[in-house]
Image (tube, rainbow, N blue to C red; front, top):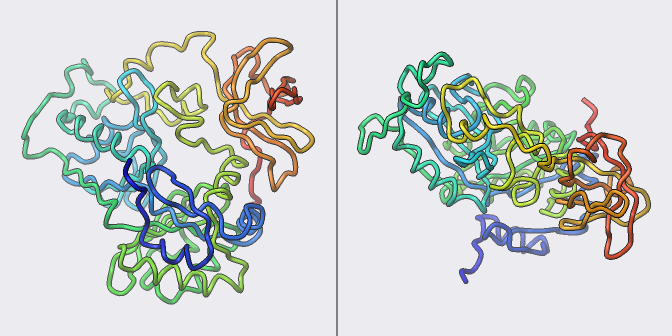
Length: 394
């Protein structure tokens, strides 16, 4: 078995006393002080995360946009420069290979950020799909025969260039209501354009640091306002140190994967391997809106045109009382009948009661439905609740 990889910030995490866990093949900080303190810091002030385990792919060339329209469930060609979009990599049978964020850097240049554990799967999918180039006709919803809108073109000179740039880049996230204040206090970042106070959600700014290009995206995985900063590995330690220095007076603390998990759960955000997998179609996970069905063709389109079986499980939120929370794999019951399974669960630090996400039978999925969780042999009441569990004040 291969030892897990470490990020460019590993020595910084050790110096801060972090506990580590193997996550997606990377040795990542799970906590520094306490899960609860780090979670609350993000909700009340700001938290600093190392997310350099994420995979990054640069897609360039005149066919980059139509290629991504075909390779992904969304429609990156409709984005304008400076924007980002959540999307899915689907399999031919409509299952989810990964969920990704796409950044449009320029007309012929995109950055795709994927999950660490799915780096190889996404790389293989892109390589296979790059052999199929959409024609101009394929960009139209009125293509007469979508099956002929793409042609195999081994060795074609105008195929997009796909580069896995993961090993050269680091990614850190500043999340929380004071995130903009923290970044605004950072003198290391120069020439930020557009300025952060003009940056909308799922958009990005460019900046320079020590003469190097930096991407600052107003994105995140916590349900709070915040930013994710992509920098060369060589600058990451300096950026991390500076963020901790300027952020400490504002309440910023380093935060690990444990807090990240409870934060994303409160925000109803899915995690690959829990809520998302190759066995789950987008509409089952509440992600039907992510699929641009008006495209002439894309991988998975034919499968998604077939309706789900009427008994296909769907993702719901569950809330409980007391202090015992359902965990991944716990059974969900309606009376004596098992109707589903928990995918993620925790005692919510913000809300003070148990929350969970679960796949359940459609007949048990309506908000307000009373169910039971089998928590190690004890049946705990739970109620179906619309996601997300938590929304920040805007």
